[in-house]
Image (tube, rainbow, N blue to C red; front, side):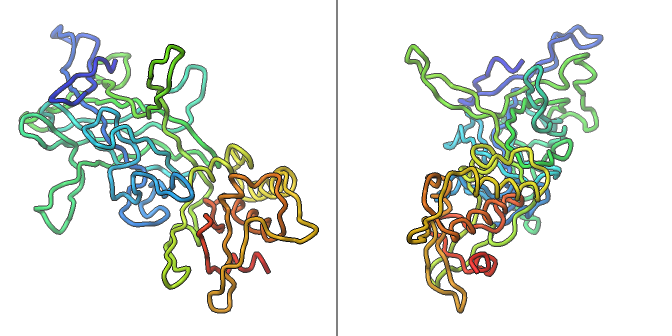
Length: 396
């Protein structure tokens, strides 16, 4: 199911069909919905912060010096945009970061090429036979639709854009939850969702008369499959042809919500403002590639793993001759407190097999230990001058 893709007014839609006859009337299918999921937001709140909305994704930059393209904080279109979406950013595919054990909320935009007043929409994780699910299904949610292009396009109807202004209209994003709380460890999970519609009410039909897939799809997948949500990576095959390789969503989980100095905008000097956000390379470094905290469920265990890595496994040595720091330099003072410039990105990118001193180790250990609550009390980049008592104390 899910094929073929229909081209409707220049838009591709994935058709969902019931493969079996409907009971009693012999029809071969129940309608042609031509629905699609076009956008997903993981970081959904309008403000900079660490989980301003319960269960939302936390701000995660694509690199130490670059915000993710979705701009973050719920202001834009989302981290995932369907390849066939009518959007200049079609094909966007960015990872998300969550505090573990929470029941996740996401916001989803849905289009339909038919006049549908409402539908039940959900998603199931696509699991490779013989393997265990890594993530969670999206709970089936009742979604209302509104007409966007007269007679041609209907979109999901979300909450009012401005509750105090009834003329402002409604958002096209609806909020959905995962069916159960997510995993309870530091980790990186890969997930592809197969989206489906289950029961629709055609525009203009009396309310209260929805039909459900469970009644007409006996022993079949609950609902009709529409498109999957996953990314696309272009590669070249052995014949020189460009092919699309499907890439699942990437979700990072950490043990707690971040605290200072992360997820805040602060003044380093009178003319400089800095934002402190985790970024993808640092998450990979700490969870999967080098420190390897994947699977850790306890903050003390995470701290022990970080200490073991920094002092025994990263391959750095102390500068016993001059005692110079490799990644730390003096950046002035904020009142009576010294301000240091710590190049954590270099520790991540090229830190191995370098001569360092105790300042380097103090910053590295505190930054990586803080990963148990999302890189909680470290510094981020080479232009990060932080006036922060906790950082100062680690040098004392």
